[in-house]
Length: 93
Image (cartoon, rainbow, N blue to C red; front, side, top):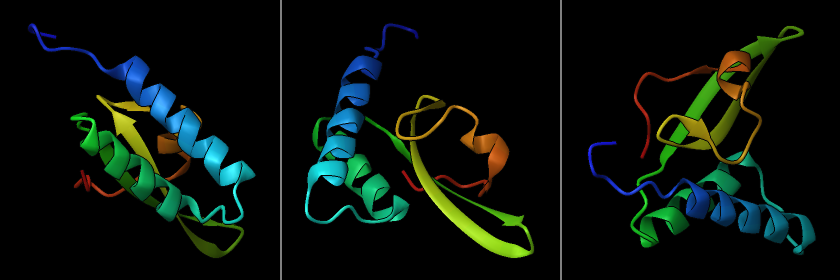
């Protein structure tokens, strides 16, 4: 890591809290809103997360999905999300 601090644990905890708030709150939001919230909160903590957006065609339907990664590790979805969705080359974080 070249002397850089690894904030993965803190990023995971923030993702967990966003998930709890979405699940227990009165408004859960979609994947984009949850991911943007997580990305924003990470940036407020000085953590450089990457907002990823991907697409796929499943059962003849176009689908889009959003998630957040920290140093290539998925925070708010399953680890195989990048295999299930074709992410845009440019990240949004």
